[in-house]
Image 1: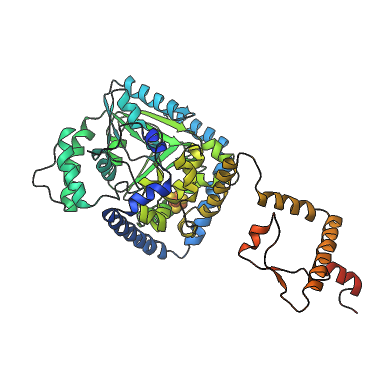
Image 2: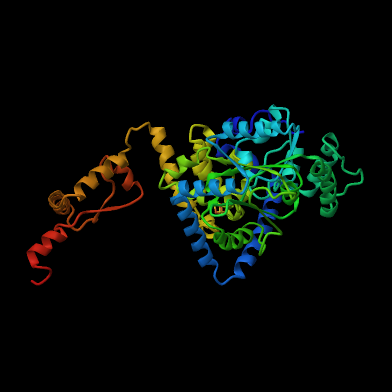
Length: 495
Ligand code: SF4
């Protein structure tokens, strides 16, 4: 078992050192680096091939961006439409302001069914709110059924990738975890288990099968919530999601409010860009859609918990809100040179990589060392923007968040640069002030030139408060006459 402390995930994450310190530990681990380089390289190549097949990839990206922006622009209306249509179809919609409220709703719903366990479809939203920990505190076992999530859960580990949470593990490590842990919580792995993928998948399938058949309650997230039909959509590769969404009597879906799409037709775009960007496939092997319960078929109690948990705060920031367009495809992680070398744990959040570096400090704030450091966990190379299917300009957002962190650290006291820029803005805003400054500068230029006849035409160092600017640059000596004065004297060169 891992020797990490058994505390809530956020509590443990927020206690982590800043990214740069955690990254040093990851960089010193050659096995981790080899696992990451192999896995990200493979997914990167698959995505590139899948995207290259389409002539209209850029048009699809532009359409995905426009649909998401339109959805966010009138989010309140779309959410109300979703609630009305889902309710009309027989689902029960709950609203949760934060993680605590969402967890309480889910725990109460599970208790109302008299269940002591739930099976789970992979879901970032439930990781974000630490639902498994809340269920455990209420005496309810939550079984992850996605293969990679199962590996992470059995290994008492943290996920390190959005799509492939166990990307930091190799096959040998997975075999050891299965042999050691499966028997403690259900059907044990066979003693002769090898690290062959087929054998590992078979062991997981047999272990999970008994849980699928026994569970009366399932918990999922959703990739999309369709406003004009009240439907939820989950895409996945393994079929475990389909088992959770169809076998138990009760289905509870925790859905971030940013997952709403205005119309059913919008899926046409997203069911193309998501699989190609995430797993490098033309379409997901399993796409499940449900609109309330259907008599005699699948779950008969359908609950949907619409989760805010900081999202409306992100929406209120004009420079940060584009992060809510994210469809959690992971393409930005797989191309990021920083993520490829450090892995996901160094980011101290369930959202690692470039999107985590902009989303986590907005959702959690920048109060802790780890959250303050995340906007700096990037080389700003721009590869993340190039691959993002919803065109989130992560580099610009990182710069915006860096400014916020530095401003907070300064506690409202303006920097020398801010003072200079404020003075420059005031001067540029009035033509008389601008003309007066031009005259002052040219007078200074004349005086300097008369002192240095025939000498250098640059100043080595400017005086305070702009001295730092000239530390690595030569400031030219101002001309003896400004353009404005030359224009007035010559009539625009017509001498
Ligand atoms: S930011 Fe873009 S590339 Fe990264 S996970 Fe979200 S949608 Fe995918």
